Length: 170
Ligand code: FEO
Image (cartoon, rainbow, N blue to C red; front, side, top):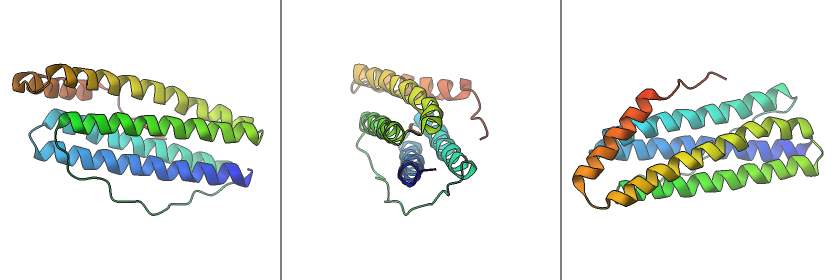
């Protein structure tokens, strides 16, 4: 594997690992602030990000590279509202999408079409995640400060999480 591709995949491994920590931090805040459904949703999201990380780790090692873990910054631990949490989730997912697109660009520049093909899974995953987060964010915006509405959204997040497919082992 070309070293530029390997380095960029390792950077993506760091970003996926940070995503997992960030969502864990958000889940903790939700759990401690009366949003058990949002907490369940974000705990699961944290596990998903760990799976995204691990999939890259295995790919890199299987292709003759070596996954390297880097130090991570401390994720933000306090939020002003559920809206604040999901605005930040959305912002973070957009950042990850851009990062995957850049990584895909590197594989094209380096003519590593196998890795480019592997990354298609991430490209599709990002479309789905952005769409899910946008829908949740729209609902939170719609209820504004209405407590009953917020309670309902939290219940809905709980139901969504309970109905979600198990996270596949990689
Ligand atoms: Fe693995 Fe949601 O980015």
